[in-house]
Image (cartoon, rainbow, N blue to C red; front, side):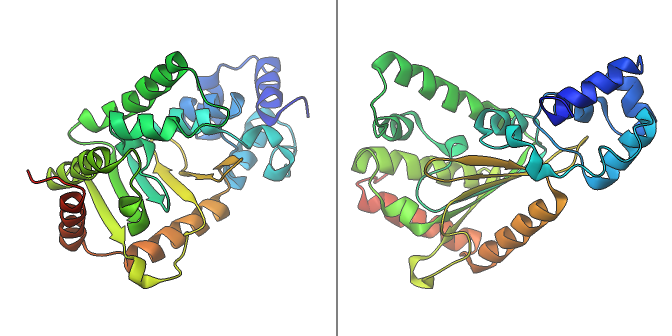
Length: 264
């Protein structure tokens, strides 16, 4: 099928003398979704693949393709960040660290200093600027809608020291108080909980199917399969149901910031 799913789709589209928009119209999809597939950032749902086969007259080649056969979809941190900038809704879960979208400068720098081997000061500055730049999407008063569920351990681990943590936690409080995001805390007293093994981001879009992104110690995965994404959504819904309500979460965060020395 060519080097990747996306390469093959682009080749078939060009052989048919179709633009991305023309193929999108024929397959009842959006041009941006076609572009993401060709760039290797997305894999179409089974129904989208069936319509692409029909539009390109390729039998059932695309619709019989298994997403697991496409290694280029794995380890897609950069692609997940690009999709984050296009999302209309984002749900975050973190068990160990504040998600990058919510991090302050001091917290981000403290996280960067844990790199092994260590980054240079110049590289660290570049990465911090990139991470903080992601949060500009929160300047839009309407989209994306952002929800976060943080394990209480995220608040209690003194990343960067008391001052950095107090600033970081109050940043979360201000975001939630402004109704820009919702931040819920998963209490330690709960014990074992769904998703406690890692980090999850779920994203919805106005012109393409939802996606999920999971991250571990040495790997990251961008999930396009509707069944997988639906399963991740169910897990998030369960962990959200176990988290504290918004006002209780805010009270806990303010108390934790006070423990770190914040008295504002």
